[in-house]
Image (spheres, one colour):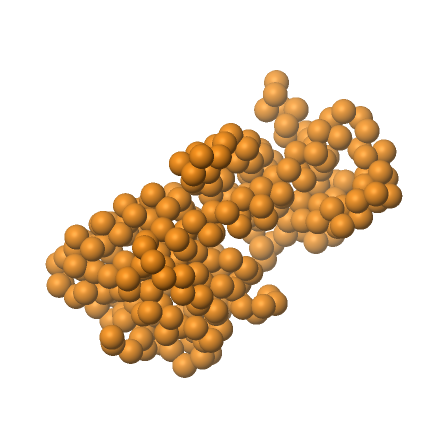
Length: 296
């Protein structure tokens, strides 16, 4: 097994850029390809000290491993792009998909990468970007997981799950069903209370009997910065639960809530532009107004 010295990250958004910074600060060379990427992604990459390699094929050639950290709806297309370069160059490149996708989608990407001659690693990220508390866990599974394991302790944790492709994606799906599913439920309860005219009474009751839950509800204030990424993630969880014998319907509803948030006046926000002065009540008022207009 070759030693990992150069890591390519696609794409250095909020999570990817901070992972890249952490890996770079821990002795690795970190590269990306910013061709056709947004100004925000370019700025985050520059702040993180990630080297831009404008030619996609050259980036693949220089990398010892590629980490795909994207919104889930782009995961398969990016895997196909990487596979095409692997097929052309003949380089048996390790490709770690770290996106929140259903295990069945991970199996599909494994087939794409393996058919091209690459080495697929199933990954699942749990936790906040490096620098915001405990290092995130990059769960890894599949026959090539040990390659990803070389990144353990370099600003991220890499628990190896063993076994077949899909296990790392499965733990991500189950975990996010609770953490992000709860965020959707919190938003739903607050929007409903506002539209039913009992917001103040509801919050007072929560303060009296469910203070921990009310504290978690404060997270709704920054939901606009995350909702756009979580819509398809909820659909992936829905598909996962359906295939596992549980209901697929709960997280289809969560996806609907995140669509509502994304279409609201706070939907344009990103982690670095959240209005931290906005109260929970004002946030819910904006979401409730959006829900009224959607209903009409």
